Image (tube, rainbow, N blue to C red; front, side):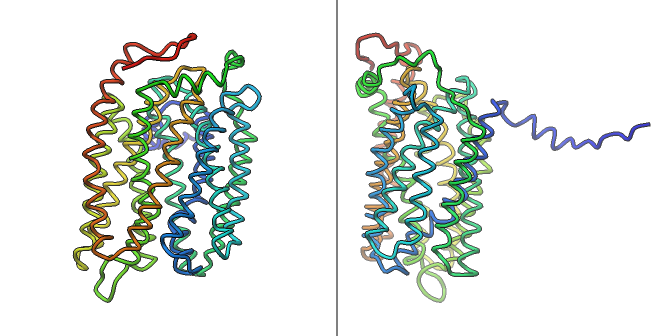
Length: 436
């Protein structure tokens, strides 16, 4: 009599709970996890390393990191155009982005001053810019509108899990060896792995029936689409918030948060805080996406804005007392995690809903340009604020919290535009769109 196979009901329930998606979306999830693993090694430690060990000022570090967004803007424009091109398509665009990111990581690994630091950030910005439009287009190509929010949540989960592990291992590596440059080398290796995954497992997903599309017309249509342009402004605000977490917040924790025996949290504590932030985001990514799928994408973004406001308020409170600083930091980063996982899949799904199929890459390129804008503004103003007096650096987070009021007002207008677009989808003929 054959031995019965062991049954694991909890595991079976978990598999049934996971979204039912094309296997290539899951492969892309693994690839993104690997690439973000390396990014996590450097994302939060690069500002600390170049400011406190290389000797660059916080303002210069902020400008250097933000300058990568300038290259990222061009990369995003090129990446979106290439993604819609029959000659390049999604796959080749992704491979090019991975190759550029490998080069950027190794340049940063050898940088000993501002010139190479600047070059490395420009290359990294270009690689990231080339990456996002085709990556988001692949997910849209492989999913139905009903699946899209959870599919984007899944691929973002790959980002957050990879970042969480990268931050955790990066902090441990720094604590054991103090070799910051090794972090950039590991980052480069993970991009090599990502290149291999795309090359081996991801085929071209662009619809061949769209191969005669006029790409110049795609940009004209997108730039005349008023709901998309309003969304661009709103999304730039959200990405500025995200950039402040990666750039200004590590410096704030290092230099301005009081503790019982001095000023500034130690690196191992900062590592633990950011690992908590990303781990909590990973745990809540799919449940939040599933829980909010019944309301409009614009209203999802309203929920995100409120969470950002609460998070910034908690970060402000970290500077008020040494006894409760860690508690407020944990709460602040927790609210920011909820804000992030509410925002990211909803934003991408909203843009795909706005976009005609033929111009999906171009629309997602404009969506990605918001990240370039935000990641230029965030590090620049955040670095400048962290170079000011302790009182100003602390109150900076109050100003950030108050900024959500304007964001909510704009989102109420976008919500009406989204409702109109769902009832009257944009159909492209020869005329430019006129939408309200």
